[in-house]
Amino acid sequence: MVLSTGSNKIKTAVFISGAGSNLKSLIKFSKLKKSPIIIKMIISNNFKAKGLQYAKIYKIKKKVFDFKNALSEKKIIHELKKDNIDLICLAGFMKILSKSFIKNFKGKILNIHPSLLPKYKGLNTHEKAIKNKDKYSGCTVHFVNSKLDSGKIINQKKVKINKLDTPKTLAKRILIQEHKLYPSAIMKIFSL
Image (cartoon, rainbow, N blue to C red; front, side):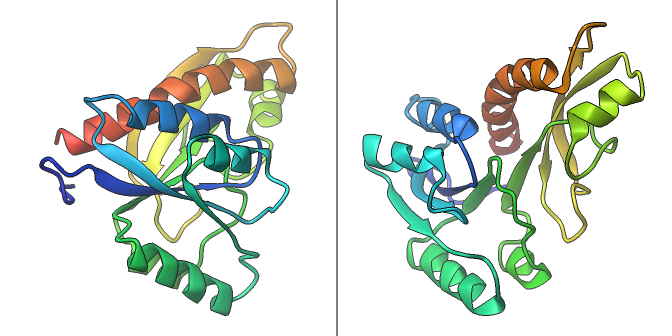
């Protein structure tokens, strides 16, 4: 996948719904000289999302939309195109994008998911992994297509499940790996 590279960094929007820890790690990554991206916009479906504070801290434009209907998606698409956004990173974004939205940015939307896909698509991934007595869980960065958590996998990181793990302790350890995996997935795509 080759987007507008060269001396220009790839204009990126990050979509969040919550605390924004993956957003923060992507912002830090974007500040590195070797990073191929620059984060131009933060979009959320939740005006109470803690991650929106990073917009203020790092002086990045932010927008909050309800994502409830096609009209709000049209507005988002308009904003993204207006700012020449070339890459969308979903980072803890808890809404499913419509097929037409995905079509508008085909091959330019990435997501990070807290399981080793294709296992455990959707929610409650840590509970499922523990309940099924899996030895490992982990995280996956993949391209977004119109099927939930089914796009082409870019990379994954395994995390061993300990006997005493709860969904909360496992989630914490996987999140640490997510912060490393997302930047490395972006590096991998743009070095192809």
